[in-house]
Image (cartoon, rainbow, N blue to C red):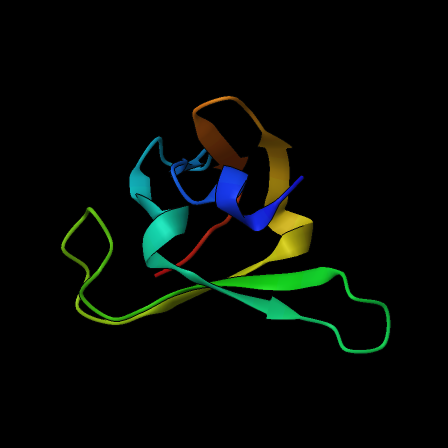
Length: 77
């Protein structure tokens, strides 16, 4: 999958059903050793919930990348 294909997808959390942001507003942290995505970083104030601080989503929390959403399962404060 190309980065441009991720850009338009919303991020949906299974834990609470909240849409927490958009992949297009986020940054990806890439592991330099293997080139794999290690985290999705949502900057402060950019999440759709109006959250004031940023959020780091480990790639292990990603359950599915669908046509319109990225489904994660993450418990956070």
